[in-house]
Image (cartoon, rainbow, N blue to C red; front, side, top):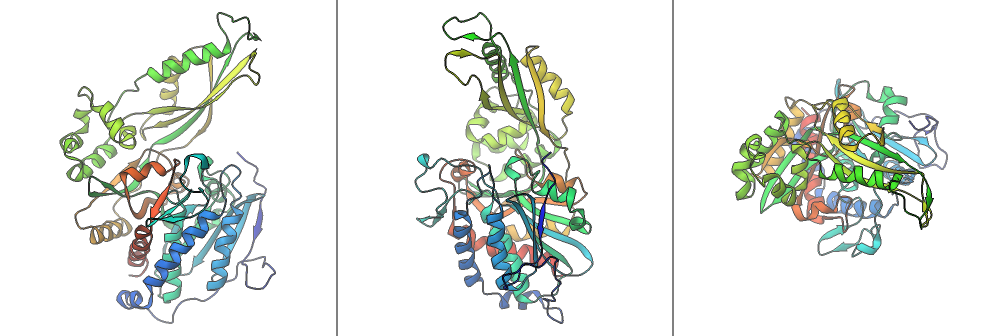
Length: 478
C-alpha cells in the first residue's frame, strides 16, 4: 500500500486564501420544483456547449499516470466550483495525487455519488493523428487521451451536478461529485485511499454511478450495458533465476530460457471456458440486437462455447465479450538483462490476469503454478474481492427508462465488465454501484480506450449531458 500521508485543503473561495474547513452553503430554492419546470430552467444548449469546451480543456490537462499529478485536474474542477459558489474539498494522498469532491445537500434518502477518475494512461503521439493531449476537434469528434476513459464521463457528471445546482431544485438526497486519482494503477492513491482515510464521506451513501458500462453501436444497433459486477483483477509478478554469464557462451538453461518456456506454456494454455449466470444473462440480453451470426449463439452461450471455432471467432470479432467466457492472463511486462552481452541471474515478467467473479483465487493460482512450473516464483501484486450490485433499485430502473427513451430500439441489460473500476472499493462497503456512461460508442472506436486516436463525438457529449441530467434528476427529485 502507498503511504497515507496527505495534505487536505478546505473550500476554496474566489479570495486567494484557502479555507481550512468545508463551509456549508444553502444553495436550494425554498420549495420543491416540478421536474418539468426544472428542465425549463436549464439551458441545455448552453450547457452542452460548456460541456464540449470542458472536455477539450480537461483533456489538455496532463494527468498521465504515472506520475498522475491529478492535482491539475482537481484545480480545474475547483475553479468551476468557485465560479458557481459550490463548496468543495481537495485531499492529497501524496504530493500531487489529489482527489476532489463537492456535495449538494438534500433530504434523508441515501446519497448518490457521481464518480470518475482523473488519471489517464500514457499515449505515444507517434501513433496518433493528433497530439494525444490536444483536445483537437476533427470531423465532429474530440480527440485525446481520456475522452473515453474517463474524462468525458466526468464532464457529463459535472454538467448534471451543476444543472441541479443552477436549477435550485429541492433534492431528496445528497448528491456528491467526486473525481479521484490513480484508478489506472489500482486506485490506492484515489478511491481506495479515500475509503480508508476519509470513511465519513461514505457513511450515508447508498448509490454510486461510475464508469464500466454504457452504449455501444454494433452493426447499426445500439446495445446498452449497465455494469453490475466485474471480473476480478489479479496482477502477478513472475521471477525466474539461473546461472549468469557472458552472452558469447550460451548455457543450456538460464533464467531467460526458463521464463520464456514458462510464458510460452501460459500462452498456449486454454483456461477452461464457462458461462456464469451473470454473463449468461448479459449475452441473452444483447442477443436480439447482436449481429445476425451471433444472435442464436448469444441466446445460449453455455452451449455455443463448446462448438468448434466459436471462441476463436468471438475473440476476433469482440475480444471484450470473449474475455467474459473464461479466466484470462495477458503477458504485459518483461524485464531481463540491462546489458546486451550479459546473461542475467534473474528475470521477471508481469501478468494482468482477470478472474470470473465466482473464481476461487487460490484455485486459480494453483492452476497457474502447474502451467508455469517449479522454476517460476509467483507473487501477487494486487487482487480484489468480487461483488454484485442488485438491479432492484429505482436508480437502475431510471437508467433503463432514460436509455430506452433516447434509443427506443436499444437493448438495455445488466452487464459484467471484463476490466475493473474503482467500484469494487464501494461495493465492499455495501454501496450499490452501476457502471454507466450516457454515450453510444461505435464498436470500431472502442479500441481507443488505452489505444490510439481515442475520441468521442460532440453529439455524444451534447446528448450525454441531457441523458445524465434526466437520469440523475429522476432519481434525486421524487
